[in-house]
Structure formats: C-alpha cells, structure tokens
Image: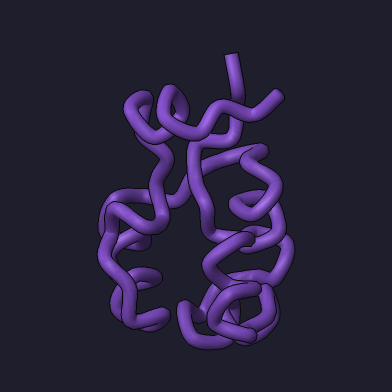
Length: 75
C-alpha cells in the first residue's frame, strides 16, 4: 500500500512555495514541514486546514484518498 497520504509537497511545488515559507507561515520548524512532505508524519486536521488556506486550495487537494489512488495508481 502506498504510504503517501498527503500531497503537500506537490501542491507547494505547484504554487511555487517552499517548505521554509510554509514553516514560517505556520510558525513551526522547517524539519516538521519536511516530515509532512515526505509523509513521515502528518499534520493535524487544523493544520491541514491552515495549509489549504495559505496555499489557496481545497483541503481535498492536499490529501490523497483511496478513490484518487485507484483512479491514478502509481506503478
């Protein structure tokens, strides 16, 4: 099973933003954002909502669902 639960890294790249920028906006350590981007750990739901707001995207764009994994499987 694919462990990539979130798409934070992808959305940051699409929005031309860095991990450091996101960490500054959230007031957290850059290493924390790095762990989210590599899916080593996940942010809280409140933090997901803040990230979605900061990046001006829907929450669903940040989180992978089983349906999206089925429609676009990674080989």
